[in-house]
Image 1 (cartoon, rainbow, N blue to C red):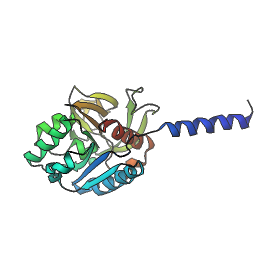
Image 2: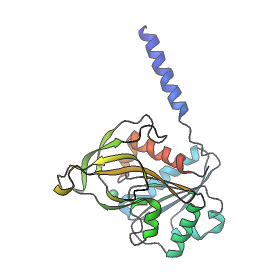
Image 3: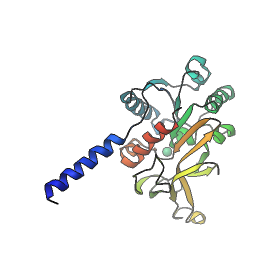
Image 4: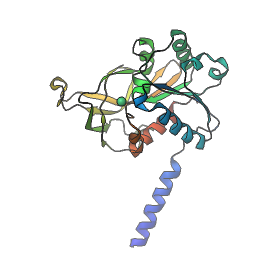
Length: 241
Ligand SMILES: [Zn+2]
């Protein structure tokens, strides 16, 4: 094969793979609820995701309050909720309304502390998400994300990758489907050497699909193609079908 035909084959393959990335979010109603601990830049995350969703022709509603979970007009029409609220608290009635919506088939997606460390005293919420952050030993460290389910739609074609960020140690629900994991070196807490913890997972909660990724401590994490791609595919996977 000549160099030019190799080049064309590569280009064609690239175009095909780019075209194959369809997200099926057109006309879907997506609610993004953000807030909580400001060091996680909830507004940055919310607006970045909202602008991408608008390009997919989804109808996006942004809210800075969990009170929106009590708004029946919004909740009766929503297909997917993306939440980015680290720590803080939620009213029990709001949490129940969120849980009811997901149980009925609304999707739920999010990342890092925005979904996996939201309301520490709300165990039913944690039961829904499938995991709860407990520590990132050593703060920001170099670590590797290993794809454990390479045939899943969310991880297809994505290779293992390394990053410098918070390596989330999480208490997890055995009911989750694990798509990617990370292994702890034990450099900071020797007794967890070699322990493998899920990074990306999916799960069911009633009829709802839940997607979570622990990647997203800082804005630059979303510049890592593998992390960003899994986030977008996870959003697309979770939306009510
Ligand atoms: Zn963080």
